[in-house]
Image 1: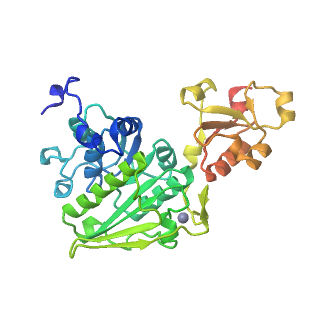
Image 2 (image 1 turned 135 degrees about the vertical axis):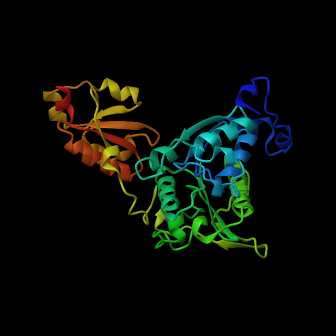
Image 3 (image 1 turned 90 degrees about the horizontal axis):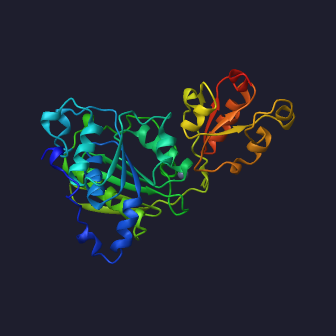
Length: 356
Ligand SMILES: [Zn+2]
């Protein structure tokens, strides 16, 4: 079916899932308001995308920098061979809209990296890890812990897979609680190196979609403090106890020590402070009270010392631009506050660049 034939008269029908007493009209409305980020639209991401779009999750974000390769198709059945070479997030968006035109799909054709991870994860209610490498999984873990957002992890190795959920609640371990030393990539091969049969990531992705719906709807059975191991060679299932370590406590996990920061992202150049509001940044003047008195700037003022002593002066959901006289102190403060998981930028050059 071409996109042109999808019209507003084709309304999604959720009656079969609304029949469940745990869902009903109220649960359906909750799903319509929900925002889910899917990192990777490959073998895991394909079923996640299909089931969440079909279920009526109102806002989906897709992150993937790749183009479609013919070798993807055996495990990524949302795509067509004729589309090889095209940008995958755009193809995935088309696939989601074909299932449910009422879903809003935002595409990010970029690598999920340290410069965008925190902002992306923070902008969604739940993030689903459908990546195929350890670096991305740990980066996603760290962003989820710092942003205090749930994340649903899966990994696949040949005929085996494992599932884990991180939630800010204390009964959910993060990845670093279970693997405090595992950071190097290449410890376990990915699909390209180790080989995989398509239905194996398909099963894991389906379970990720189920867990995501359970989290959004508040249903029981969210793998709190558990790790689920599945072996599709002999169909064995093992649920291991995986409690959170004492070092991993809200609002951050002490085991997170190497989330790299992209300085270019922290520091931004603006022609005027009016441009900050276009980017939905609240401007905070962090100079001392004496400096503000000598050179008033008519901005919200929180002195740097007060801000660093009490980061809760800023909202965990807000986005901020810190300014000082030259941009040096605001950069140092922004770096510190980012470690607390806050979305903070620094104005390069400070107020002097704006002639104030
Ligand atoms: Zn942890």
